Image (cartoon, rainbow, N blue to C red; front, side, top):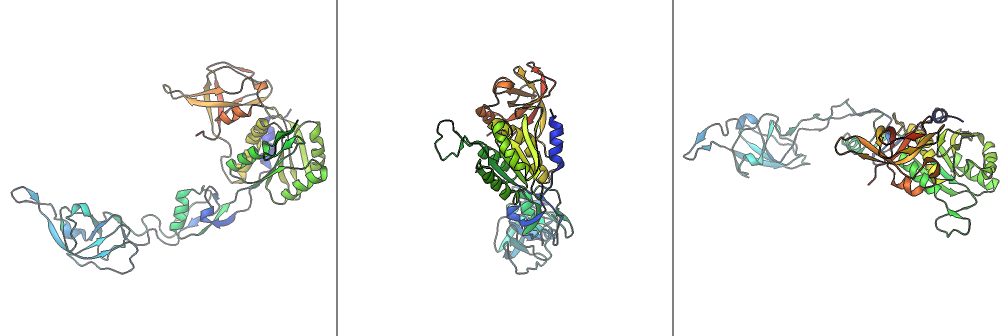
Length: 419
């Protein structure tokens, strides 16, 4: 029986990221930047007001509030003429003369000679003339040309995951497209004479096709572009046509229901004609029997997963998801892991790495992680799909361990956050 590490090593050794493509920045979110985006212009592109107020020469208001006058001890004020107003987007050049102010709006270009913006709250808000109650330092409330980015600066580095801030920065430096590592295309196929799609009523001995929906969702969650093929025909010619057509337009193919059992052998025979494929027993539970190979002229990684939906999802998580993440260019393709204390005993199958559904919690007093395994004994619960829907982690038990006592530490793999 092959170890999980050995099987995963075989899988990841064949990882090939799709060639980078140039996409509109609106389509780049969540993808890995594949180029150094160098700014060709400064950001901001001109000196601009950071707030609503008055553009001033700071030297003209430096004495405001410096003395106390009057019976009530009011601070002295300076009164200056307001010689205009500039709004954001104005393209009319404005020049400030000594002893004058210009009313400005946030984002407005700063008049020539102005070196600060006086907040409205530091004045009486006048329109023709304005009383200034306190001074302002040179450079205050001004966004200087190139404060954010200078020409020649790298705005977005290669290898950066493009999120909302990066999209905004790309737009700010005038880029409408960017080179990215595209999402790998994953085709998900189900096989099995007992399967019917969810728009039909199952007859005696028939079940809904759960796998193609669940695995397609898992592939999207991993970051792939997914084609849910659904149920492929069981006749060899039909099955071959379905697989061959997607070999031409996929980076990864996942076939659920073709891993183990006598009924799956006819699928193996067909796939063997398309490339190298091996069905092996891997020392893990659930999902011990699984297949992997490289098919077609482009050597497309192809996975054969168990028919059981829980087992199929576990094998996908352990074997397929890392390949998708590597293809996306992610430097850390594996899920985050932590150590947690068990709140109840856990049994496992000796000789296999167990991936048990679990509920991860935090102790309010100690802040340490606690975990509750879901679904009963390891060997008896691989069919319980409802417990997988409740789980927010996998509890991994190494192959040399068959029993874990309450309070023992175990390794826990984070799944998607709940709610």
